[in-house]
Image (cartoon, rainbow, N blue to C red; front, side, top):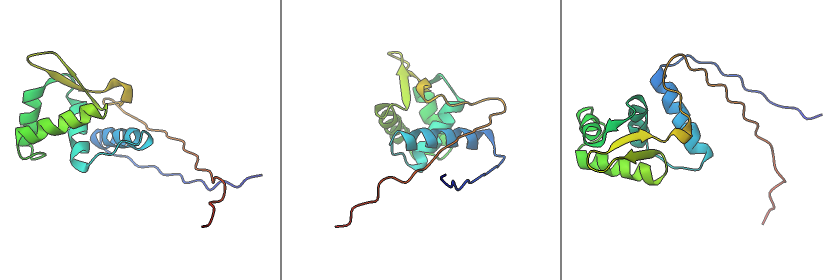
Length: 126
C-alpha cells in the first residue's frame, strides 16, 4: 500500500485573491507564463466583464498597474494571444476574460483542488 503525504491548507482570502489564484492555477496547468502585472490585469478584468477596451486601459493606467494606455493595450493583446482574453466588436471593442477558464468571480467561492503528485520512473543518471 502506498503512503501518501497529505497537505491540508485552509485560508480565508478576499474575492480578488480567489480570482487571482484561479487564474494562476489555470496558467500553471496549461503552461502559460504570465507576469505579476499580467495577473493584476486579468484579475481586474475578471471583475469588469464586458468592459470597453479603451476605458479599461485608462483604468489600468489610473490605478498604476501600467504606466501608459499603450503598454496596457500591448499587455491585453499579449494575453489575447495566450487565449486568456477575448475581444469582441469592431469599433469600440469590449474585452472579457476567456470563459473557458471558468473563473468564479462573485458570491462566496470555495476552491477545492485535489492534486496528486506521483513519482515517475527514476531519472537516468548520465
